[in-house]
Length: 525
Ligand SMILES: CC(C)(COP(=O)(O)OP(=O)(O)OC[C@H]1O[C@@H](n2cnc3c(N)ncnc32)[C@H](O)[C@@H]1OP(=O)(O)O)[C@@H](O)C(=O)NCCC(=O)NCCSC(=O)C[C@@H](O)CCCCCCCCCCCCC(=O)O
Image 1 (cartoon, rainbow, N blue to C red):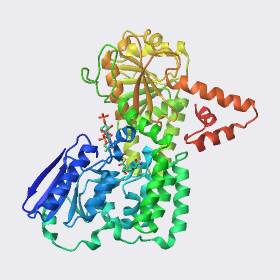
Image 2 (cartoon, rainbow, N blue to C red):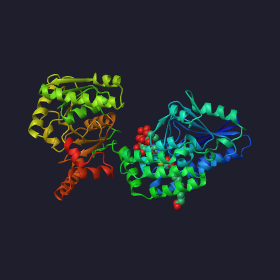
Image 3 (cartoon, protein in one colour):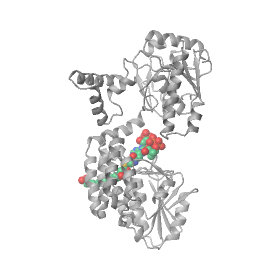
Image 4 (cartoon, rainbow, N blue to C red):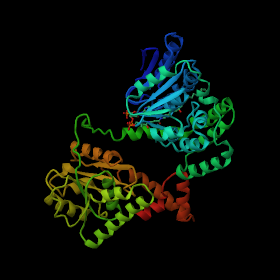
């Protein structure tokens, strides 16, 4: 799990724990053994810590449930051992240095990073805080302002910004490990006293109150309903005290999170989101046995809110789309809406005008279905009317090539009945997007009785490609998402009957953490 390699007076500890080099208990124990061995070996003058393929993506998240994250040696122990080492320790970073991996890196005396490496503290998004001294060492390295930006937001940054902030001492284009070994040799024997991050003062302390208030305001806006950001901020503020006292504050703030329901829920979601795209069917089919077909181009039937949103989701992923309506007036309205949304993205600087133009160059429009003779996929997104949908599917079946997938964005109707209007029920499936379709992550891929495994595989691949979390669900009224939403909608309606205003219900739901309240969602549908 950790290879110990010696090179001309340098000990290289290379973490090798696929897929992401998480700091599981065995890894921690082997890092500790490596540090001990290098410390005792008189031939060794310096130590390099690196990872095979990538650096270290943090603690092993499964251990927060099992409890072994707190078994000796913890990441806290490792960080202290590294920082107090009498021999210089250099982190050689390629790929990701996240969470506990980032904490290990900033406990090293020097950091050499590949230009494509990424740094961040994503703990906040799994309901915890950087609890191995990250909230104390990081402000000492980058200053209070940057720490109050990066720790509560969980944002990743690249090597260039990491260098600017002082996280990284050198950015390299070549092999970071080779460079780090060379560098380690060159600084062996030099004093380390000003290289120990925990011993540094915190820059920006004079503006502490205004920086804290701004961070709290931003966290409440950006991470609504989440408790971790506020605990992160409190722990970072503890860095204004001497290091040991700050560590106590980090531990007590961390304790509240490690025992919270939010931590359990967010970590469940972390693994569930990664498990969902890995589908399997009762017949045993899965990605292991069935390959999906990539979608090279697509058409969307219906230029309303859902149709334009779905078209945008595909355009954003670089898939050429033909937006189809039966009436030029509706088509023009849909295209105007789409252009307006992209113009909004440009003015918010989410994309540049050039990117916007490149995206829109992949949008075609058509009145009627006649031109759809060369598309890999058609997604129907007209209003919920079975007779209309069956008529559209029958016509598409006549016009589109036999291999074209015909998918429907119905949110509740029977997929088998829609498929029965075609001679290719194996290629019919429900792709249920949620409003706004260009933004919401969930995609329900609804499998009918006759939907083939290849169609399911293709829809799952497609979902991942357009940045969604695709989940295979069965064909029943409302599928899974809307069955859950119905209960939520009923309760919201009862509140109105009991005298609340819709905007009040929305406000409470949004303060709880939902991006839009139930009535705003209905306004959009
Ligand atoms: C790294 C990524 C960006 C890679 O993304 P990519 O898309 O390439 O891959 P996937 O996301 O699909 O992941 C592949 C695969 O790996 C699994 N996985 C990923 N990360 C982890 C992980 N950290 N742990 C476990 N498993 C992981 C993932 O599930 C996939 O598995 P599959 O089976 O589906 O293939 C991306 O993966 C990513 O962003 N990962 C998460 C990064 C992250 O969140 N890192 C932070 C982790 S939390 C942390 O580091 C905490 C630390 O700050 C400190 C904790 C210190 C605790 C010590 C406290 C001691 C207290 C002692 C007190 C005792 C006293 C007492 O008991 O009283």
